[in-house]
Length: 578
Ligand SMILES: Cc1ncc(C[n+]2csc(CCOP(=O)(O)OP(=O)(O)O)c2C)c(N)n1
Ligand SMILES: [Mg+2]
Image 1 (spheres, rainbow, N blue to C red):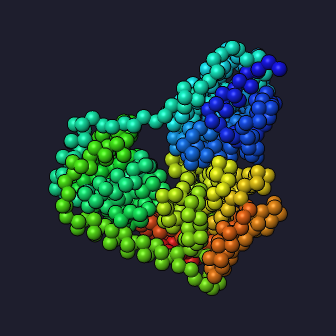
Image 2: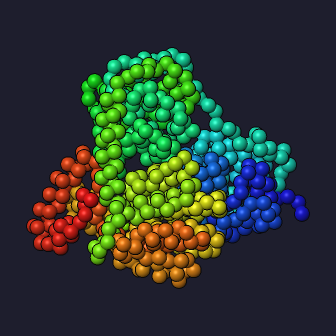
């Protein structure tokens, strides 16, 4: 049989090292999926919602650093990919999306299921093109792959079903060496390094703020912190790369951070930002004498969150290799000592909140998160849902250089965690994958819970079941709103899991937390833990606390005037500051 465009397409993907494609079939995709079936080199990972396909591909790309692929059929099929693709693109992970299109002759005639993916996906991709004829192949696909891999982000190819079925045009066979550009190492110019050294060699207390750009630079960052006697605050995406084996660690700042990270960042004379685009401007130091230097491989990131005295374009590791020998030693360590002491105190308080207790009262989410961290494998992969689960992940999951942590940290979408766990487990069948899910997040894409059974993925899903969109409820109350639209009438998720062929464990008594989590993580198939937790729990950094106190006062006044006594009782019962 002569090679079709679809055959050429899947062969190019195989040359690019693609192992699997997440998606849902459809008539416009039949040419491609049939080529995949005949070729037999690439696995088709059949999910139930295309958004899950995109999140799963993003997780695979994040964990492996390599190209991952998702696909949807024409119109609604590929449109469902969009939220996951925004997440992949904003997290800068290399993902190719295949958007099948209606028959080419019908485009522009208002045909059944007609959309224009090349317009729709523009904002969430580096490259987004329609393949309208066989002679565009495989070049268009190759460009898409190079853009996704080289620029790290999403590429979308749109291909009408009939074009995929046409005979392939003659074209040179793709070669892996030319298809997969490797990352360049960016070393800043010597004068920039000298100027940065001069800034750091002045007097004053230095604090470092480290983000995901510190990947592969753990030891370099610590060596510099040692010379500077600088505490290290990390942004959430820096946690998996920088928090572990780190005597300079003082935790996180920001909305989900805590006091030691917050003060170390505000209370310094020089802030050195390394590979971070930490977005919350209110947490940057504002004092007139404070100087700020920023190192980032992407020039567009420099100075966009806070005005900087010096911006250096370069990879963190390469920059520090050049910089650290120029930084003077023998600095006073009082700033570091004070910050790390504060951190130890804050850590102790956080750990105390996670200490198990017994009795009839509701379980706090913290002991659940701590038990997950304590019992998880040394190389576990964690995913966490947007909402309160990110707070528990940030504070209680201990990293060690082998564990991984992924979330929707830039796009901030709900329902990411279980979807990402599917990609993580598919890519790493032998590793333990744990999803920290909210009840809102879990139920939003709950259809794909069934995929764990269908695909044989032994994911451990822990649902923080607080019967609420908890994070938003707290936000509403603390901004002076009467909470609205936040409650859930949930099923018994553990019973639901059992009915789906997944082991279900419901934890309702604080005394059962440790053994329930341990049993779940020891089970060798998929598990759902339905952890029934308290609804209003949020420890927050000091500035926010003051703001929230004002908001809560306003909320109480409104509740009294509105005759909503039950709202006040709710608040009085809350463990808000716990
Ligand atoms: C797709 C989407 N819809 C809405 C939001 C706004 N939002 C952020 S967190 C959240 C609540 C999440 O609730 P849940 O998953 O139950 O976690 P909890 O905070 O209760 O632990 C909402 C509605 C969002 N980030 N993404
Ligand atoms: Mg919830």
